[in-house]
Amino acid sequence: MAIILDGKKLKEKILENLKIKIEGFEKKPLLTVILVGNDPASMLYVKNKKMTAENIGINSEIIRYPSSVLEDELLRKIHELNKDDNVSAILVQLPLPKHISKEKVISIISPQKDVDGFTPYNFGKLFSGDEPFVYPCTPTGILLLLDEYNIDLEGKHTVIVGRSNIVGKPLSQMMLNRNATVTICHSHTKNLPEITKTADILVSAAGKNIIEEKMLKPGCVVVDVGISKDSTGRIHGDVDFENVSKIASHITPVPGGVGPMTITALMLNTLALFENSKKCL
Ligand code: NDP
Image (cartoon, rainbow, N blue to C red; front, side, top):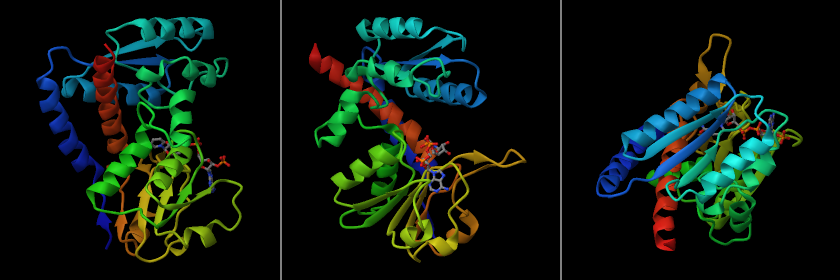
């Protein structure tokens, strides 16, 4: 049976250390989250982020707007937050309503406060091989988890299913930086199983239940980013956990794998931006 890559346990360990560190700060970091609309999943994510932050001594505020909010109003608020010295980190919860340009909104967040690492500045730095202020949260969380279990990427063939800006693209670059050989697959990829079978490390971020045991090489490491709900409301990932865990060497559960690590990386990023802002004074 595969070793479980326990994101929940690692989250507790990292956050405990962060809490102790933050206790020693005179001024606390502030994470500001912008939430537009009433999407239940987004509301839950934002609530969890705020709760996690406050549990470790990071101040957090949620600024809410109705889904009818005008793009200009949102842009004005971000400009205001960019200038506010009390705000260490800004997160705009995605998705945004269709009438608002996600690209425009993200692009005006100050790179020094861009806690997701999604601004063109930080993304560009990542892809040019330079240091962004912070790296995107989910890929960071995945690498922290692999490091914890001493899974080395050097020379390994990593197959990533999914090419979004949130997961697949930044993760591919971060894994290249660790000297992995990276293949990215997506919905137009032909013969997906032929490719996944060659993976030493498989990361799936499709949001669909597509990874079966027969698609994998015995002994591979499996990281399941996907979060979906079945008809009974049960949360599951992209991977057939029950059968894949019989042949993989390591596997992340859903829930309890990548999800807790994403929020851990968000806290680490908030702290990194806060500490960097003090350096800039
Ligand atoms: P997107 O919908 O933006 O991207 C999904 C990607 O999967 C796309 O690149 C798509 O290809 C690809 N894809 C879809 N179907 C297939 C298929 N049958 N075969 C191969 N590739 C396929 O999603 P996100 O990246 O935002 O999120 C992916 C999943 O991860 C979701 O379930 C999301 O909830 C979860 N997630 C979990 C996080 C966590 O912390 N655990 C954090 C972020 C996301 P194409 O580009 O061609 O459309």
